[in-house]
Image 1 (cartoon, rainbow, N blue to C red):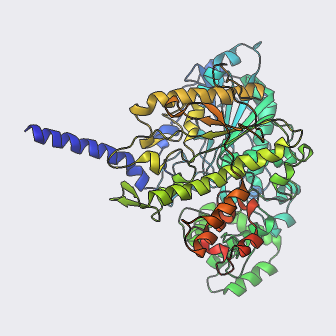
Image 2 (cartoon, rainbow, N blue to C red):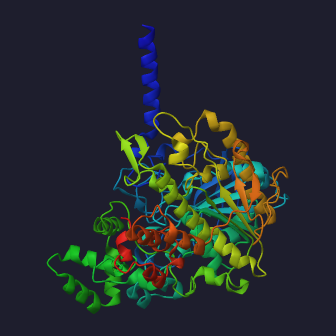
Length: 636
């Protein structure tokens, strides 16, 4: 009898552990934490708190009481709905509210394929969200609102990630930062995917102004949200003269775009990029219509703007050949092409594009475009050679030590998933080596190369970090510290001090690591908010953390963020540069064949996460890769 009870208990434990991985195996993409999150984030209307009523220039707004003695205002529109004739046009400012706006419910996300970052219920392949999505959310300490004479607080504006294809500001809760660190937190929505970035002659020829012609509509949304903050944030207790941008992944990339855009000058005063790099896209890549219809021959990037228009025409007139479709596009008036684009439903366009890509729910299309007006024609790295060329503000830049493991963990090339829930790494040494290559290249492009350029000028200082937390549990079913480690996105919960909302850490968080997580999170919140207050992370807002010094081209240059059990918070010399990584590829014995070396170069410097600034066709040829067109190595 006793043995039976033990066996039953073991079975229950195994089932609980397996259930922790259930939503991982159900993902349509390699996003580890993706699952239905509507129950957590889209909670419906919250009870109004009359004490939260404010009267900014935008009009009277009332919100609700939230955790940590804060007020929150959610779902506030900051621009006119980009629908109808305003689809693929520059963001338009909104008229003043004619009556009290009840900001007690999050707005729906911008249109995207469903995933865990959408914040609403759905299934793989579903298109969710709405075009009328340009809203923001605000958290302030109650005292900052009730005491009209109180000193205005630093403002932190969060730009969500999601590959610029997905995501919403609504899944990030700012109450802990605002309520304990004396800041005002703002999270925003912006257009994503083909509605956010779309460049074509027809758009330029029918544009009313250079912003309309740019193709950078998601970028313009972010700029408009910052204009709204400048005009209105004082009523919420915020200081419009002390605004810090922070964002992760694509959000970090968009932070970099704000540094580069002349239209964002003066709208913010400090910037934090978490795992986001300064890569921008040349227009030819966004628009090219190659012989392979929708595939750029060098990069392998699918779904150019011309390609999407051809899909729409082919869908309407399936009897036309590819040549006829091209001819029709060339001979159709730009106004008629725009009528076709604006009359087509986003769901239809997105599904046509994703079906063509062969990866349901994912659209490969160029984003963050070098249009020459919203963003310069030059690369952002080139701009960093002189403070006069960009919005030179104090910067905090960082990555996670094992960025790439988030995406490798579900890749059958590296990992077997028995029964869909029990991961087994095929070759641990090779797995770690590939992750190291990609993650170090990510850090080199996101942190080291920009920091080196900026530190050689008279620009404000750069503060660099690497997030090393890898204390997820390990058991008979999964070695999570090796499989996931300090992967992409894991640091977000630590920054917001939120392990119950936000992007769920799932099986990575349990009672065994709760103490270390909390301690590291409080330190990171301290650093991030002190940077917002002063322009330096220093010893944190509490003054009790290990001192964080600015980037130096010699000696210690990076703050390592980890728990005491793994060495704690400490400055260290950790350098990653592109030239060394390229040399390592050529001499690495684990890359056994010539094709392996060519694939590594193409993935790291052309197809990797925002790393194309470092692609060099001549180097690729000299490596002996002429027989291996780089486009063939693009995933998806």
